[in-house]
Image (cartoon, rainbow, N blue to C red):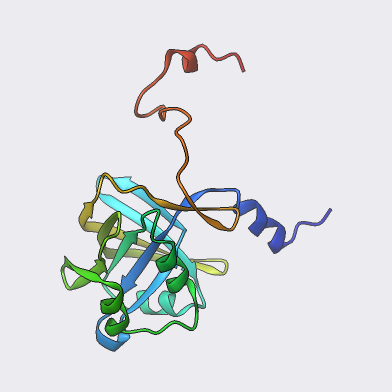
Length: 181
């Protein structure tokens, strides 16, 4: 059986991910785009990476700006995720002001009401296949510890379900040490 890009996309859909919105630029050149490819890369120094389609408008914009924000969407923010994923959406600061923005510092805005947001200074960029990876040094951040995240899994926006167990790096259960697998 031959594997196709569509097959790999279907496999990748099994990897649950948080949903956020990256915001960059100023005035009429300000843009926002929904992202699901986000990863903390380093805690010291604090670095994150986001991946975007190389041919997209946001990827083009991020190549020319020094700073941007990432807003993690909350479970009830699915309309924002869908809006900023639509290619025919409006651009510019007026659109974002209608949605609601906050001054995140350093000349950057983030989405008002996000479960968390951070400001990044561009550290590096790398083209990988049909996507570009932008690595940013985190310079500002805030979070609402009570707000649950919006996630995407198998092509659908979802709310986080019940916890199965604590992560091994936060609390180690004795049963995990004695597992017979």
